[in-house]
Image (cartoon, rainbow, N blue to C red; front, side, top):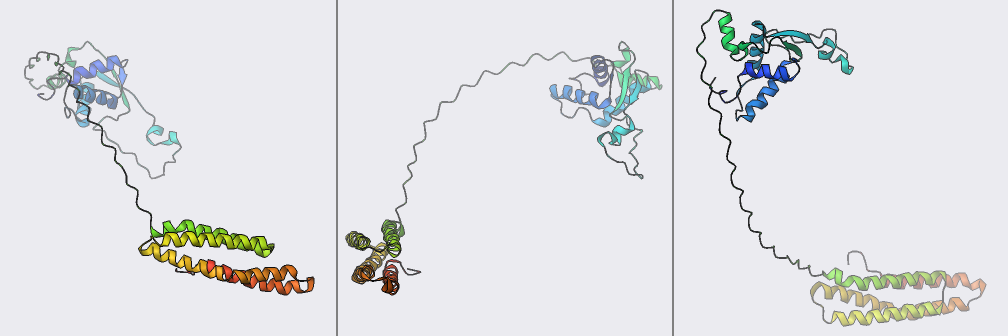
Amino acid sequence: MPLRIRGLPPGEFMRNHLVAAGGIDYPQSMYKAYKNHLKAEGLEDGCSRASWSRYIWMANRIGLIQFDHAEAPTYWNAQVNGVEVPPDYVRESRPQAPSPRHYYRILDPTDPRWIRLEVSYRETIGFEAPPAAPRPAPKPPKEKAPPKPKPEPKPPRKVRVVTPKPPTAEEKVRPYEERVGLIVATLSELESSPSLELVAEIENSTLELAEDVIEVATKARGTEKTLLSNLTSRLLETLDDMPLLRSSVQRYLASTAAERERNMTSLRAAIRVVNENLTPLPGK
């Protein structure tokens, strides 16, 4: 067994494992422990599940272990988990390999046949066995490599300064459009409570906004200048219609109860004209 010469032989490990487990265990548990033992010795493929089943079978044949008990059929048929087994269900049978849940008990831990399990089986059936290979000397402990020096800390990365994008033409004109929205809101109040004070407030706000827009438009270029020019035209048209709005309010305030409904219609028409001047047309 050249691959397993660094680890314990299967028979010796099986004996030690059963003694440590209290004298009884099932093959899958022993196999997993043996695989972990081989991995600790640096062997990844030293033993397969089929090979381990063969060692179990040989130990059972020469009387080193004996079958103790198995899990109930309800465990294998999943009835313990509430599964209903169909009538035609046939559980797989593998008589050539012990089931992972077939428990075996060790009979004599001091039997010398545990050391060379396969040779002991061959001698039992009358075959000649080669002499035992000498055990290799234990490996010296591995010298720990000196710790690697810590790498020098990297210089901090330069702070990336994100240059903000310049505002678009629409974003530059948006504050003036918001002021137009305030004028339109004041204009809607004029219909519910007409007064000359509101008319004066609307006219002053429109005049101040027009002066600011004209001043900014002289320095603007491209799309911004076009948008500001359109806004200037709307504000100037609104200022031209302010006398009509003021006269409509004065006529409504001076009217009698019989004339008030007719004058309210005229006032609403004047408010609609001013509102259309302030509100931009769709698509512009």
